[in-house]
Length: 158
Image (cartoon, helix red, strand yellow):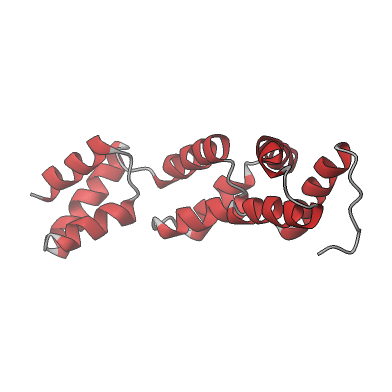
């Protein structure tokens, strides 16, 4: 029964060992049976938290523009251990993260043109914050983008 549950879940989408263990607990699979199946699936490479974390980081950073902090939180929420999380997110190059932040601001910039400069700054920085970017980086990227439009931004804002 545990084997069938895990196989069905893995055919829908990749899962972490913790996610599969939780699903087995919900279905009242005995602990020993669950561990045996999870161990065997790990041996066979059907469960690989490291590969899951790497793929997650690549996919969510490129697809959604998420920063390291948000990616780490999502992986921890899925039961990936801290060491694996750290290894996966550290693969993201800081320059790549900066470029992604700039691209996100660039895409959103036009829709804020009717707002005053302070409101634009807040809105764009908040969008980056929701995606896990540090406040300093967010305001630096927003300031650069607005200055390219010829707007003056106070250095002490916010």
